[in-house]
Amino acid sequence: MDDFLTTEVVRWQAHFGRNDLPWQNTRDPYRVWLSEIMLQQTQVVTVQAYFALFLARFADVRTLAQAPLDDVLHLWAGLGYYSRARNLHRCAQDVVRVYGGEFPQSAQQLQTLPGIGRSTAAAIAALCFGERVAILDGNVKRVLTRYLGFADDLALATHERRLWDQATALLPQGNLLYNMARYTQGMMDLGATLCTSKKPACSACPLSERCVAYAMDAVEKFPLKTRKLKRSAESIWLLWLVSSDGAVWLSQRPTPGVWAGLYCLPLFEARQVLLAAVEQQGADGLQDLPSFKHVLTHKDLYLHPVLLKLHGRPALALDGQWFGAAQIAKIGLPAPIKKLLQRTQPIPGAV
Picture 1 (tube, helix red, strand yellow):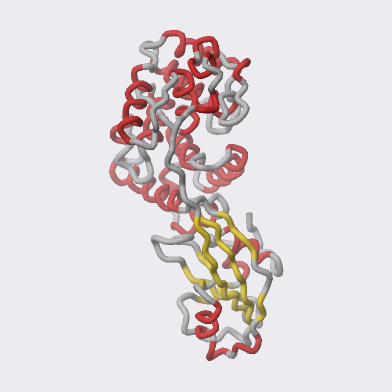
Picture 2 (cartoon, one colour; picture 1 turned 90 degrees about the horizontal axis):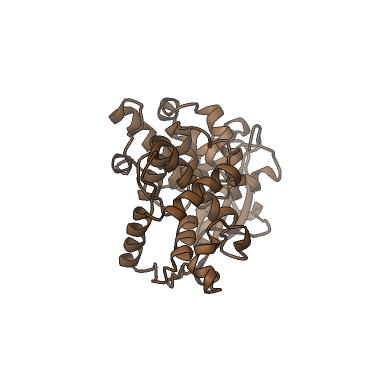
């Protein structure tokens, strides 16, 4: 154990770390789990608003488990990575069905639940139950690799496993219920506030005097991970069908796939395919609207909306159904689709 590391991180977190976030200062695994899932690939400032909305609607794991998936997806809309919301719902159901509504207290058991990986399981177990297990999210990897001077390429699984081993060896040994929560939160806080990827505030860091990367004047070279994600681009045509009373035709996206489980305007890979789909409705009234780009993690989507206003609410040879504005306000929509619909008709209660 590195007494300097654990002592300094625990002390620093208590006095200077983040202690005022709505999911902190609690040992409630439901709140910690919910925040950990939301914080994956999402900034804290964004999560705070969604976290409050979720707690207002789903006060505990049983309420979440009993809710329709559409209700969960509706509140999640805009957070992205929608598989998180589907796994969140499945996980809540499993906690109720398998564990009687009580989260298991070991990281090993927590990892058996949908959507909970090794680091998330460890965060819940350490923060709520004081289990001596290491987390290794992006922030913690950055702190540890710099502090240790860990220069091996984390793109290789064998090197990442070795970092896991070192992270575990460095954990506090005593008074675990207190120290594991402080230490775990402190490592995350250091990576988020001081030991940042660019322009880290080393002069304010409690670990700087023993940080190998700082001593080498090479902090921005850590962590090393050579494999880069390849971005791609895709063009999609959106068929925006509107009835004479303002209803919109929407279909639920299949799983897996982009926006899986959410309701969406019908998507087409080319304008010609879209034209063929509405041939019986008469394409003379089609109106091409300005296209726009929507950025996903690994892909840029170029969206081309095509508007067609119809008389009444005719039956269509397309998957989906007509939704009025009040109905749309209760279902999950992809963020760009919600924004598009709100340009002409604000959705009551939309967030």
